[in-house]
Structures are given as structure tokens and as C-alpha cells.
Image (spheres, one colour):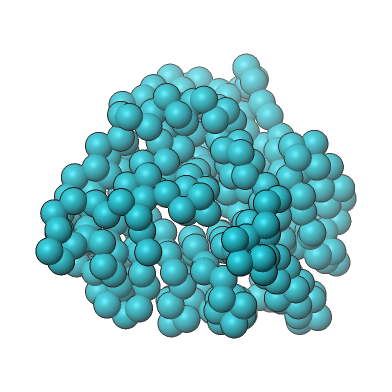
Length: 335
């Protein structure tokens, strides 16, 4: 990894995936409950939202370091698969088995069914060990991502504490979480958050229209000290509110739908990759949305080829909702 211009730390992306597991994806047309099916294809991968983000970053040419928990017989599968994909990981061992998640993709009807096992129960010592590892690895990081849920036994304040630790290291955090973990973490004012529509509604406690209600809620979070809020809206793209650079509605290109699993993770990966390269705000938004579109059109939960993302970049539409002060254009360089 190249050194920073100031010589203090290398350009490295640290990704927290507290709830790793195994993802098994089955391709079953006309899937129905109570009927015997033979999948025409299936795949097994190391799973978890943070894993998908790290995998996407790797596909986009970055070298993330993945941190999290892994335990039981699943641990070897997870670490072996990550290594085979070239993803460096430091996973804290836990006493219980990491979870299994099953996703059935029905291409014929453009729908999917998910079954997620209950996450493992971790001990206070395992939580403390992961927190210490996070602090140590931040010494090498330029930007950090916290993505996904957490195992049982992890306090709701955990992500908030991680963000506070990162602030002490002067490392910005991109957060993609939900429910109580998100609500507590927002108090620590991460640099970027990426809730989806339902998660944003749960956070503010009311239904939100598109685009007006979503935009208003995102702006309120920005007013509380979060610099960028990316509210993902499925096939409607994302609404982005910023502290000083205006507000935008980014719409994805039209693609052949296969599965939406991992699309939000790909958005985070694309936005983060462009951020570490110090691209403009437009470049960050465009790479995030193009990455999500590439995942939606493939069988799997993460970006597989950089070329598939690059082919979509020019087709992302970015509309200005509210201009930055004194300027109606997207700034060339996000600060």
C-alpha cells in the first residue's frame, strides 16, 4: 500500500463485519413453499454485510482489511474463502458457531426469499478483544467502514464506541447499520451513514415520502453533525444530503434484475473506494450507484468484476435537489 503524503499511515480501508457467516444462494425458478425443488445452481460464500463490502472493495482494486467475529466449524470455511479471494482478515475467535444465511433467488418472478439463522452469542471478553483489535488496526487506516448487524451479546452502544475510538485516531467512518445499533451510533456523528428507506423511517420514527420526506429526514441528520447521509431507495436509487455540498437524487441505470441482495453493500464499497481516491462528490455517488447496479444484475451478493461497474458509470443519473450555498453544481472535490 502506498504511503500517505504526510508519511503517517498507509492508504488502508478497515472494514468491521461483526456478524460474519456463511451465505448459501440457490437459483430456483418459480420457488414455492411446500414444494420440492432442485436448484439449477447454488453457491456458498463467506457472508455478512461487511464481507460483501470488503469483497466489493477488492473487486474495485482496493486492499481492505476485514475485522470481525467468527466461530465454530464455520470459521475455517470463512477464513479460507476470504483468503482465496485475496481479502486479508483478522477475525476474533468466538465460542459459538457463526450463522448460516440462505437466499433463494427466483429469476422467473424477480423475487427472493431469505432465511437467516440466529446469530451467535458472544461473551464480554470476546467483545473487548474485538474492540482492542479495532483500535490497534485504526493506526494503519485512512478510512473505516462499519457494516451490518452484530451478534447477540454485543451492546447496542458498540458501534457508537467504535466510532468514538476512530475519531480519536482521526479516521472517518462510513456506517451502514440499523435499529438500535444505528440509533446509538448516530449520536457519535460518523462521517457517512447509509440507511435504506425502511431503516431511515425506523430511525426517525415516522413514514417518509419520496423524495420530500426522505430528504427532510436526511437533512435533519446532517444538521446533527453527520456530514453525508446516503438514503438508499432500491431501484429508485439514493437520496444524498450533505453538510456543505448540496443534496442530490442519484438514479441507477436500467439493468436485468437477478437479486437485490448485497446491493446496499456494493453502494458502500463504491462510495468508499472513490472516497479513499479523493474523487469528487459526483465521482463517489456515481461509483456507489454503478456498483449497486452491477450487483443487482448478477447471481451473488457482491461486485464480481470491476468492468461490470465501469460499464454502468456513465448511465447513472444524478439530479440536483438542493444546491450548495452559492453554487448549483456538484463540487469538484469533496472536502
